[in-house]
Image (cartoon, rainbow, N blue to C red):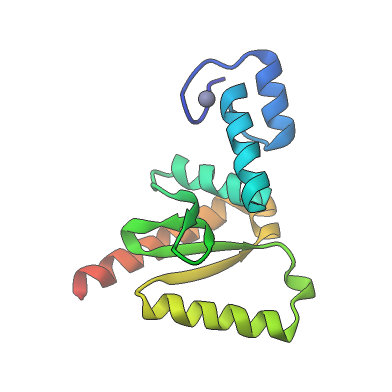
Amino acid sequence: MKCLECNNELSYIDHKNAMELFGLELCSQHTQRMEKLMRRNGTPLEAVQLYYGLKAAGVHPMLEWWDGNKSIDIAVSRVKLNIEIDTEYQMLTHEQAINELEETMHSYKNGFTTIRIPHILIKHYLQETVNNIMGIIEGLRINIKVI
Ligand SMILES: [Zn+2]
């Protein structure tokens, strides 16, 4: 059992703590850092799980990337892909929906692609979600080359 961030060997108690908090193997130092980052940004747990899922698949994602206006849950800068995790989509009002569409429009204008992923997808289909995002990254990479 090793920390996903620093590769340090985990003690039984560190492992237990991190698994209970995130379902991920992190040392006490990186558990603390992650809790701090999540508290500061209101990061959903599923964003953290997807972040490590993508890392394990060989992607270099960034968690809570500041785009100049707001913090993006997960960004893959190489292909200008922004990933937002939706946690309250059931309560989406029309104001929120039009704001999201406007944000998406602005990000496209700046050359970014934004995808929104419901948090339940990560809970139930993490690997499939990662596989699909890998496909999106591959598609974006090819399109960037063409341009
Ligand atoms: Zn660590």
